[in-house]
Length: 145
Image (cartoon, rainbow, N blue to C red; front, side, top):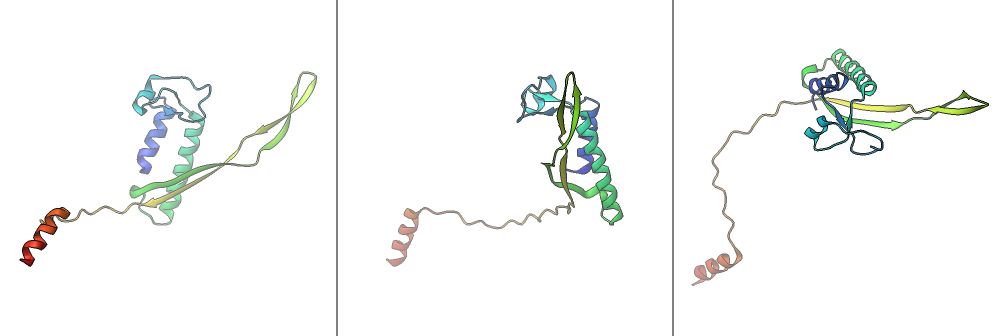
């Protein structure tokens, strides 16, 4: 996906113009009409996650610009989110203190420059017709006679 398209989609999510379908891990996710375009019923608008990914995309775009790459032809080749170690702290509750852990993550993103695809010139080459085994045997017999 091109960077421009990805940023547009994420901005639409923050303004609730376009939803993100939740196909897996969707317990407790409500239904919305915007999910019909994805062929799904459950969807949400994860504003905080979308803003963070927008920030990461902008940072990666600036890094690639400093390296001398063409920003208009950048494509997201790979993106992966992994769990990180939980950071534990204590929370005060009535008559007790409970442990509480945050759930951070590591995000891995690879951007590449997409080369422009050049179409091959159309040459009219006579393609060989596929001949059945039966016809091949007949041709061999005729050639032998």
